[in-house]
Image (cartoon, rainbow, N blue to C red):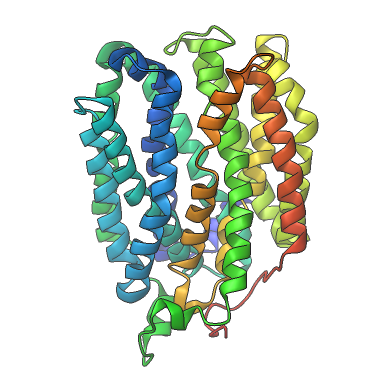
Amino acid sequence: MSVLSALRELNHEQRHTVLASFLGWTLDAFDYFMYTFVIVAIANEFHVDRTEVTLGVLLTLAARPLGALLFGRLADRFGRRPVLMIDVILFSVFELATAFAPSITVLLVLRFLFGVAMGGEWGIGASLAMESIPPKSRGLVSGLLQSGYPCGFFLGALVNWLLVDHIGWRGLFVVGAVPALLVLYIRRKVPESPAWQASRAGQAKLGLAQAMRGHWKLAIYLMCVMAAFNMFSHGSQDMYHTFEEVNLHLPTGSGAAFVLVALLNLGALVGGICFGAWSEKIGRRRAMIIAALLAIPVIPLWTYGGSFWLLGVGAFLIQVMVQGAWGVVPTHLNELSPNAVRGTLPGFAYQMGNLLAAGTATAQSWLASRDGLDLPGVMSLWIAAVAVLLALLVWLGPEARGVDFARERS
């Protein structure tokens, strides 16, 4: 099923819901990655080591489970739509506040608060979309939704390339307040999840412990899987721009640096949509395993291509595989989650995985500073090891492709 044919099968309201969820994750990622593009500039302004600035990445990732739990529980109680709007406003406000940080300490605190708000968006947006569309469209729409992440990465790279020399790193965070406008679109065009409305009709409100009874082993398993997923994506993305500056000697605002990031994100877009759609035919687990393992032979091109264009091919292909595996995640997690906690569990498992993987950028930076190691080598070994771990964890787990969300899962 092609993207266009799948979208044509959706009704007017379903298309708006998918678009709003896609834009929410795109703009969330746009704000997140803005920070990774200016690590060197921030270190220079505050006269601190680059590794200290990467703590902002760690704190953002570490705070996201708090947001997933807080906003997820609110979404299960009060609906996906209103809580999603509040969440988008909050992460935009904290992004704007980052532009005015007077010290590295204040900046790190603001990145933590941004992480709390960011943590709520993915789970709510994914649940709203998955609960609003036909089961046969979930795989492809899942890949489309997850492709919002590399699209946000691309937009961040584009804004950085075009504006950083003119408005500086602080100005970039002012631009990062734009996602707040998405709330106007959600308010006008996006209805509440029909599955949530059906599940709340005549049903007593359960506490988290009651709703999760019998599902804690599943939750722990999903957290472990998402830790591997986050080490996979963040290990291939967060230090990539630093790799361009330090190892490839490409200035932060150069066209060459932008082209590599653009190719990287184009590959992510292609991979997410293709593997997400393919998972409808071959199964969720099989699609994720194949994508993860195919990343390994691409690694030499990605970090040691030998020429600009070979590096570009490597950047494209590595993200076809990384985000190809990720493209199946939104539907896989939502299909495995019980109705009563579908607003909470997918996002919380995702963000707990982020917490467990939060030190990825800092660990890579620290390892690369050791004698006998460099950033390309560290990134290469990291991705190879995580790809094998991820494939193993997915292989060991369950699958619920095509499950009926209208039927309460016990």
